[in-house]
Length: 179
Ligand SMILES: [Zn+2]
Image 1 (cartoon, rainbow, N blue to C red):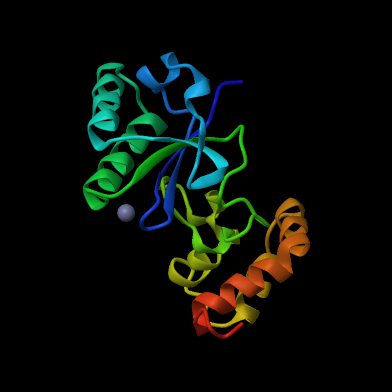
Image 2: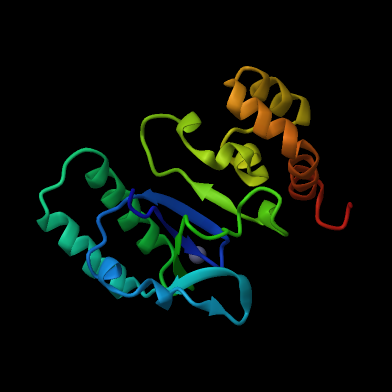
């Protein structure tokens, strides 16, 4: 099993999927620390500082990992340098996440690609900002065509949340006053 982590920035509303990244200190800490934030009641997140995450990277580098962990380390480094001074947090996949489809305001979030394998590897393809900014779908029809070419599981998820994804897409494309 194991816990999958996400590293996010609340100011920019973006996140990285870190999968089962070998966090050392974070795993030692009691999960109860992922307490409800009063300003952000729905989601259990752990506010985290750049220094804390950098400390974790030190451990991970010492661990002699190869493959995907090394790759994640480089994406985390980039994320930290880009979001210096911002409000960062760690979230766990065992709780509701603010970017889960159908959550209020899910469409504000964007996934930052954290894998070199391919764009299709990452979940962000249901998120309007990713569809616009990363996939470059300038018109909604392109989103529909893209989804038609995906696996049954992806098509079904898309069908189920189509309306909400479309609304979010329109908000980003036409401005938040349009709907
Ligand atoms: Zn940021």
